[in-house]
Length: 308
Ligand code: HEC
Ligand code: HEC
Ligand code: HEC
Ligand code: HEC
Ligand code: HEC
Ligand code: HEC
Ligand code: HEC
Ligand code: HEC
Ligand code: HEC
Ligand code: HEC
Ligand code: HEC
Ligand code: HEC
Image 1 (cartoon, helix red, strand yellow):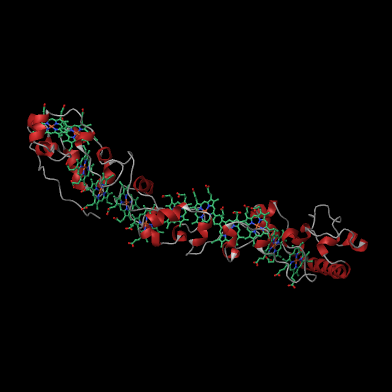
Image 2 (image 1 turned 90 degrees about the horizontal axis):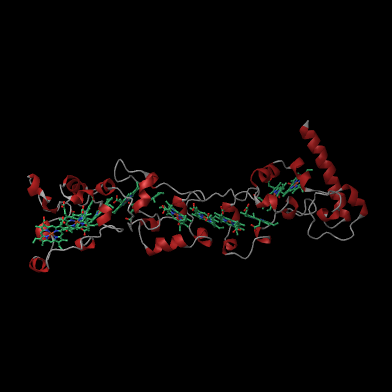
């Protein structure tokens, strides 16, 4: 039933179109006054045919009668293609008057590097939902038309991430991927939220951190150091790893960074290294072991590297 009505409507409009085609060069421009809501067509002839005026006007509201999907799409997610333009701004005319009424994006979008890209509709799949963007698996260059910082970081800090495409990680625009989707945390207690304390995605091998890293996160790879410090009877026990190994991975602190009240110069001249008497910072020769009689554990720094 509905189909029949549509068909009649179709026939009616098209006979009018055919008629209008004979009388006026532009269908859309033929009757600007017939529908108040119709946006002004760009090249409306000043004096259009009076006969057409009252009867034929293909306005944006009419389109839905035969094309239900585009209006619904625009209604749902048209964005500025809903608010800033109408159907007729893009589809200025109609068959049979015009065989191709599909606009080029460049009719309206020019002047930015982004608009020099090829195949706009590869990403903007549906012009009626312009921000429903679908990214392929191998996209980098197009991203650079808007984002410059990230590629700079990736190139200046070469890592295995530098060889990936942007869209390998950002498969949906604006989506931030989880590191743990692709990597196992260093320990069972560590979660996604911890990764960014030490890593930045676009320069993952430059490990820098603040003061909010707990000892157990370092201990994921440095068990011996963590255990030695946890067991020590000295007051270094309460000092966090990141207080001494400040800011940057592998930095070794100088004792004098924190200790300014030093022993007499004569002693230090004779024993120029603190470690001669205090051994390793993690245990300080189990200082003050003498007092409580506990046996000092090996002063030797544990060899513990290359845990994985
Ligand atoms: C009476 C029904 C009817 C109305 C009303 C109508 N159209 Fe169409 N339209 C058609 C038909 C049928 C076709 C397909 C013509 C063909 O394939 O030869 C078509 C084709 C099109 C196409 C081209 C599609 C292509 O693949 O090339 C566009 C764009 C279009 N219409 C937009 C509109 C817009 C915008 C409106 C409102 C201003 C509108 N139409 C109103 C029936 C209609
Ligand atoms: C910003 C420009 C723009 C606006 C606004 C716009 N369209 Fe389109 N429309 C396009 C483009 C571009 C295509 C071609 C899509 C393709 O090739 O897949 C298209 C395709 C179409 C088609 C044919 C293909 C299909 O999806 O059926 C119809 C019909 C159509 N539009 C109707 C409308 C109607 C009705 C409106 C208003 C509610 C409208 N369009 C608003 C740009 C626009
Ligand atoms: C008739 C003019 C016109 C055509 C043709 C047109 N657009 Fe637009 N488009 C606009 C206007 C106007 C805006 C809003 C202002 C702006 O962002 O420049 C817009 C905005 C957009 C937006 C942002 C939408 C939002 O809500 O922020 C995207 C994406 C877009 N256009 C993509 C396209 C693509 C892709 C094409 C080709 C398929 C196209 N446009 C064709 C006029 C047009
Ligand atoms: C590789 C995918 C891709 C291609 C190809 C592409 N775009 Fe975009 N476009 C995007 C993304 C992503 C955005 C950002 C959307 C957002 O802000 O959420 C965007 C935003 C836009 C916007 C709105 C923001 C602005 O700067 O005005 C317009 C308009 C636009 N694109 C038009 C085009 C046109 C025209 C083409 C073809 C010349 C094109 N796009 C090609 C992915 C693409
Ligand atoms: C047309 C310009 C444009 C293009 C092209 C574009 N973007 Fe964006 N992107 C934006 C804008 C605008 C934002 C929002 C920025 C903001 O909120 O500060 C954004 C946000 C993002 C965000 C989220 C930022 C956050 O803080 O949460 C990511 C991730 C992103 N883009 C990645 C990409 C990737 C990957 C590509 C290529 C596939 C791309 N973008 C292409 C304009 C673009
Ligand atoms: C989409 C998957 C993906 C995501 C998400 C991801 N990575 Fe990677 N990452 C990789 C791949 C692939 C490699 C290379 C692995 C290889 O070759 O063994 C890699 C390598 C690394 C490396 C070693 C780099 C080198 O050059 O040796 C580090 C560190 C790293 N990732 C940390 C992270 C962190 C931290 C995050 C979150 C901010 C993250 N990754 C998110 C896929 C991903
Ligand atoms: C290995 C996965 C991965 C790759 C490859 C990647 N990103 Fe990201 N990106 C992320 C993660 C994770 C974040 C969240 C911030 C963080 O962890 O450092 C992010 C954040 C962003 C942001 C938000 C602002 C910022 O810098 O934090 C933008 C924009 C962005 N990426 C764009 C890009 C672009 C453009 C490319 C390609 C040149 C790219 N990304 C490559 C994973 C990746
Ligand atoms: C306490 C700091 C810290 C935290 C938190 C951290 N990492 Fe790391 N990560 C490192 C250090 C340091 C290295 C480099 C070791 C080296 O030089 O070989 C590394 C290396 C990596 C590597 C390279 C391969 C490997 O295992 O050596 C990947 C992948 C990685 N981290 C992923 C992650 C993920 C995912 C998270 C969050 C769950 C995370 N990291 C949290 C410090 C950290
Ligand atoms: C993903 C494992 C991993 C994590 C997490 C990690 N490291 Fe390392 N760390 C290593 C590796 C691997 C080395 C290099 C060992 C080598 O060179 O033999 C290393 C070396 C060191 C060194 C010694 C540098 C030297 O000159 O001998 C220090 C100090 C260090 N890490 C401190 C830390 C601190 C503090 C944390 C926590 C913020 C931490 N590490 C987190 C893997 C890690
Ligand atoms: C990040 C700062 C920092 C660094 C670097 C540092 N220390 Fe300490 N040290 C402390 C703090 C804090 C205490 C406890 C002081 C207190 O409680 O008054 C301490 C205490 C000590 C004590 C007394 C232990 C006790 O239990 O009575 C000795 C001895 C000592 N440090 C030696 C060293 C030596 C040797 C180095 C270099 C290998 C060093 N420290 C590096 C912060 C540091
Ligand atoms: C010749 C051996 C020797 C050397 C070398 C040495 N110390 Fe000590 N240090 C000691 C002794 C013994 C004590 C305990 C003194 C006490 O109990 O009064 C001590 C105590 C300390 C204390 C604890 C003071 C307090 O008030 O609790 C600190 C801190 C300290 N030394 C730091 C250093 C630093 C830093 C260096 C290197 C610049 C260093 N020491 C070099 C033997 C040494
Ligand atoms: C009081 C300062 C201090 C604290 C706290 C501290 N370190 Fe150290 N660490 C040092 C110093 C100084 C060295 C160089 C060896 C020495 O002179 O004692 C060192 C050496 C290391 C080394 C290389 C030698 C080795 O033992 O393998 C690693 C790894 C290390 N620390 C990890 C850690 C971790 C993990 C923590 C926390 C659990 C930690 N450190 C806590 C000062 C500290």
